[in-house]
Length: 315
Image 1 (cartoon, one colour):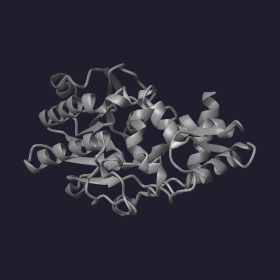
Image 2: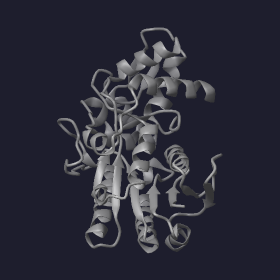
Image 3: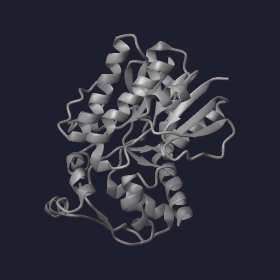
Image 4: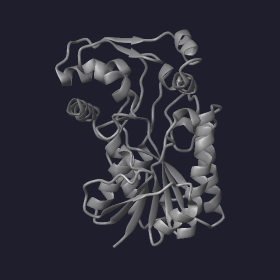
């Protein structure tokens, strides 16, 4: 039976593990905590992923390693990501496996049109540069014939698996579905934005991991994502689904206030480099993955329905 190693037991990692196990494969789910899931075929292992030798041993015999990690502190990416990413590459190469990394759109920086996978990684922000360098390092290893790599890039998440890590699910939707005013820390409520359903991330990762074709490696793929919607449209739809008072009330905090707040709240300061994603159209084009793998994005309304249901279940 084929073995896959999934690194990270957060929402995306658990969803990927479930999807691969449901396909009939074995999965080793690796995290610092050793968190497990109730799924036949999934084995949990507690391990610090910067231990490349230990990770290589855990990955021995695996067909694919999936990097669904994120550093604990959003404000320390530039310090924490490089050693983690290098250890994952080293371990995957040592195990003779293939690597799929779950990433985002930070590396592109500000854009003027829909984002496709062939856009240059030209971000000048710290986090965007970190992500871009991770991908360049991975591609360089494939060019040297050392390991096959692929990267999956999605936009901001919606869905039941990523409530705590989603901008919408943690900062906006709880207030909206409760009929309260939502205070939005950045951006505009009237610009189109792509929202990626977390289950569609797992579906694409699994499709890549399960393929025997070489054409999926050495390149990035955008997660199948439904048509963009403004923050106001998403909030209105969430209020409708939840039976909350309409119209949904949104207040975007002034940029100057957020900038000052960033001096005392590190997270607000760290968010500044991604403001462009919410101040101008931020649209993901997922045509390539949809065509290559025959995948279709979860409709936005269904994504919101499932997110609202999960938020209510979580209390």
